[in-house]
Image (cartoon, rainbow, N blue to C red; front, side, top):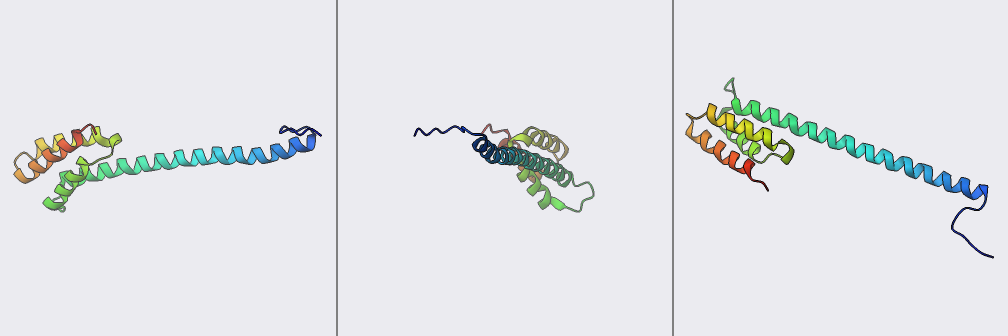
Length: 118
């Protein structure tokens, strides 16, 4: 008797399809779920960038210098996708806060970190 790995009867074909369909559906569902999670993480990173910019400019004066220094440091270490926007924020803030020597030094250091290609 010769054995083959391919289905030879309708019952074997039905069993193979019954196994393959859930596997294919689970694969596509997993891929879609991971893509959705990546988009959500990207949105969270952009929101954090916006919060850091608000902290850095500190228009109402409630954050203080330490919060601005921490925001500058975090902007300097921003993820690769947000790095161009972070560099723009840091450069503008350096012009805006040129009279504050401590904050200007922190902004220059953060801008140098964000400008690194690696």
